[in-house]
Image (cartoon, rainbow, N blue to C red; front, side, top):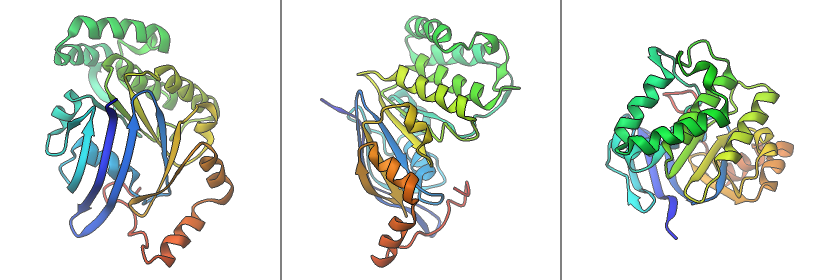
Length: 257
């Protein structure tokens, strides 16, 4: 079966700073994978490069459902089935959530099917109270993340990258968002959940956990990997890289992450 997301030898630099140093990653359809790593490891850069952000010079291969997306612009990558939920969802004054979903329905090419998914997801994710409000305006952190999950469910992409969806959430909201991710698990979707901490992984069942340090994935394993990191932190991995002569280059200058 075709892999939902396949990344091979992905490198990326911003000016003279190389941030990604050969990332290899596969997320099959039907699976939820977690990507963990300390600040400055390249996790957010990976998101930006996969979505086609123009600031980066990238080489390597990346495909969505077997379709090569390197070289495509962001809109074309979205049409290919790639979706990103943001760490800090943007407020869009004057545009309601229903307005946004309506535009997404028309752009999908299959508006009737999109609207049917929208109504089903609205009931399941309890977004009715803010569908007629400007996107993310006045919403709590948990409500913003629920709105992102709503857009994801309606879009029905092939791959969803969830960039630190637990950022800024209290423990109840973390649990709720984790449960939403599990509800979205589907044989037609590959999910990559990016996080610093293992707490959100206690409420979901990741099939694999990848650890990124200094622009590379340095460890892959089951959920026990997240628990090990919770106990030991990233210092041991940083030490191993230091001995190997591959020190981290520092944070992504665009984000400080």
